[in-house]
Image (cartoon, rainbow, N blue to C red):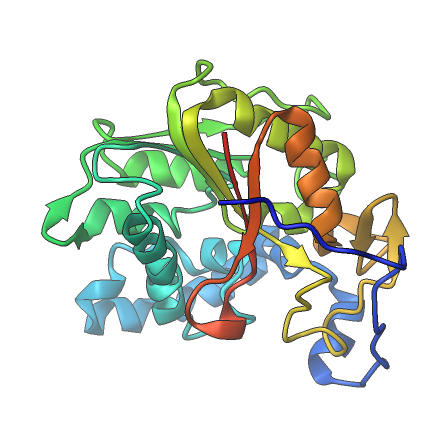
Length: 300
C-alpha cells in the first residue's frame, strides 16, 4: 500500500459553502456542543426517562448505556429513539477491520476516546464468522462517568478501561495535562482506533495521540482514526458545519468552544503520521456513505 499524496493551492477550506439557515444550525449557535447538555441533572433525568419503556419492550436495549451517555458521544443528532443508531454504528467498521485483516479475534485493540462502549460492545456481544473476540480491548476516555459505566458492564478478562488525564476546554477542564501518555507498554497493540476523537482535538493533542498510537503499536500494526476531513467534506458541510475559523492546521466551527467540532486536511494528517514513523498512510471510507466519517489509516 503506497501513501497517497495530494496537491493543495490554498490553506483555507476549499469551496467554503454559503451559510444556509437551518434549525440545526440555529441550535448549534446556542449549544455548539450537545454533549455539554448531558452533564445537566435535569437534562439527564428527562432523556433517561424516555428510555424506560423501550427497555421494557425490547430486550436488545436493556444492556445499552443510559441515554444521556449515548447522546454525549453522539448518536446522529438524535436525543430520543437513538438506540438502534448506537447498536449498528460500529457494524461497518468492524466488518472492514476483520475483512481487511487489520485485526483478528485474538488481537490487542486500543480505543482512544472509547466513550460508553459504542465500538466495544460489538467485540463483547457479536461473533465474526463464528468466532468470538478473545483478544484484549483497552478503552481510554476523559469522561470518568462513561469509564465507570463500562467498568461495571464489561468483563475484566477481555476488557479494561483507563480514565485519561488529558485536559480539554470543552470536555474536561479539570484535566491535569495537555499531553497524555497511554498507560500501555510500547509495541503491544495490534490496532489503535478512535471514533471521532480527532474531531474534538486541536493540533497539539492530535500530534500527541498520533505519536502515542505509534509508540504502543507493534511492528505491522495500524491506526484507524475517523475525523472531519476538508478534502472529503461531511454531508453537514454548509448547514451544521462550515469550519471557517482556523487555529493553526485545525479548522473549527466555534471559536468560543473550538473543540466542539474540528476538521483537518489530508496533507497535514499524513505529515504528522510520517513525522513519528508511519510509512503507509491513506484515507479510507466505510460502506454506508455519509453516515461515516473518513478514516485515517496508517501502518507501522
